[in-house]
Image (cartoon, rainbow, N blue to C red):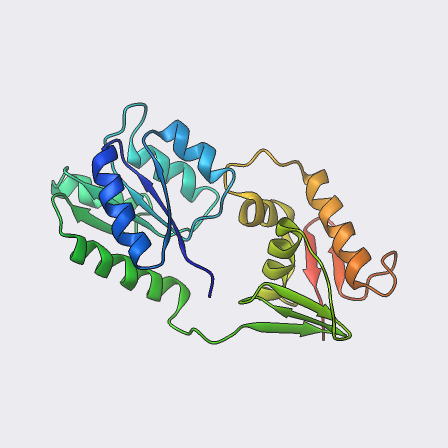
Length: 228
């Protein structure tokens, strides 16, 4: 299974490095931001699986970051802060935080909380995930695609888009949801970019891209991967 991606948002660079080293030793992929500006820039480029978020930041607050994030994403958030009052903890949960860890904390407890939240959010199965439609087989775990048994080459974004549609097969998915999930919650991607990527997928996977049998447009909503 691909490494889970964690974003640490904390202006204490030394602490972030210690946490990053520990998490990377446990096969997580870790990025660090020291301000909300850096955090939003990273969030616009990468879809993270979990965010470890301090409250006191030089240019904003963790609470404000979480509020904005919850408008577009359900990514798990753990607040990690020296602010330990009941009011702060309640605020953290009320605005969408999933856990609240008071500083100072041990690396062992942090890892335990991260693993527990990952299990609740994504499950524990390491089983290979494969989705098929027509003559196409998509191995989401290995990030491979075949059509009639032959490999299909997809770009990073093309695969991420296809994988999301596969995981929501037979469900209509809104355009803004697809953009948020594939390009990032704070990306500036235009709907036309999504349209182009859908066209490319159809050209590679559909027998007749002009009349798609599987990757269909749902007018007024977005797209659906239909295989009934």
